[in-house]
Image (tube, rainbow over all chains, first blue to last red):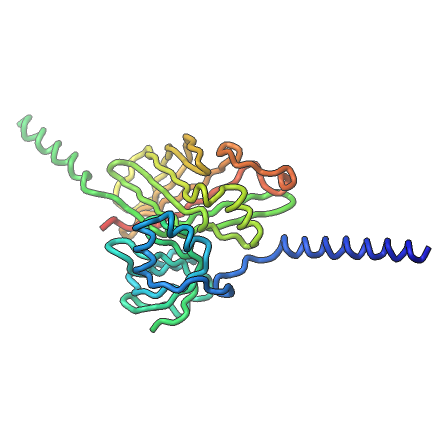
Length: 138
Length: 179
């Protein structure tokens, strides 16, 4: 009798743990790029070059990876609450970094060299980086 | 006299023909799904948009992976199961609008119709829009609903109650004159 009770109790406990874990995973907030481990270090120019020369290859190398990109700021755009920093690539193209909220204080200026960490999502007109944070502007 | 009138008219009609293309690489596209069980929201701040006032054409393109969700699992499911971002990384719209939009400041209501490509499926859509001309900028706004089923996006029955059958899409693109 006690053994049977024990088994039922253990079963119930396991169910509770499973449900709890499921609930936790379901509601888990998105891990920000800033908290994630950096997968690749690269210069903005080289990143742009790799995407424009072989997009497919670059997609498998960089898309959905956290990258640290170093480059020269060519434009800063503020639209409503969103800020985007454009790093020089080649010609009109560049690396477009959407800055994560809370980074407004330490924005670089146009012409400065900057190191930005973010999630690479592919190439549109420019190489896209989202959820970006500024690591240093030196 | 008639010839002079004609020449003046021709000149006048060419006046607005200067390039009036406005564009941005940072258009904002967000979508929202509301059901009693769950609200889902995602935002993309890197939509590329181009509006040509003379040709009355509008074009949008965006990367699916640029949509950021508050919950990690939602983002994963969106990219991997629903829009299949690896297979179909981009969504596009190209079309034309009706109604006259001069370059003088003001808000102009328009109807936009064209082809929307999403998840590899192209559909003809007509949506209401608004073009606002102010300080040399052109702001394009639109809000409309998209049915995932129209674009062959399958939602498993397990989560059917959590995802609305119509997803509300909102677009705000602040465009600058093209250089």
